[in-house]
Length: 155
Image (cartoon, rainbow, N blue to C red; front, side):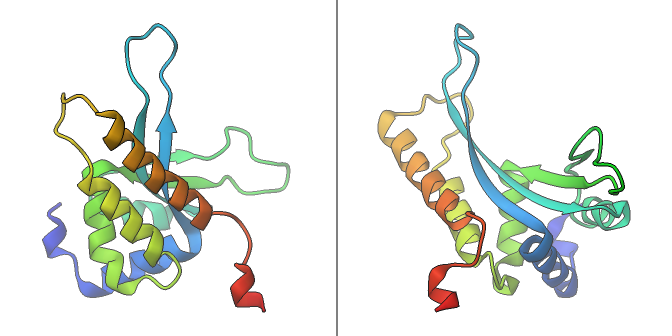
């Protein structure tokens, strides 16, 4: 699906779902020792829900992504929680489309977009300076993603 064909209302809907039922993450992936690969950073946008209809709508409306159960064995008496997630350039395009509509996760989206601007071309070596810049954005994102209401809002 071409993301340019998505209506403004669907961008706003997705922004609300990401705000309330989702997350924007930059993860640090450390490869197994001896694999010959270096550590790398990965961007992901996720939406969680127990009703697969929402997540199927995300996948069908915004194209692609993966859908999977969060836990293989849900807790007794609880519904199976599912997640729809996208990464890299698809995540960036989704964040760009949702940016005007975010209420809670605008800062995270801006950090994620800045992170994507730091991506090198596929197959190029990451310099220590570039890795450090990406790591700084990952740490910033981690601080924003901490659970709980920020103290400045409660006071």
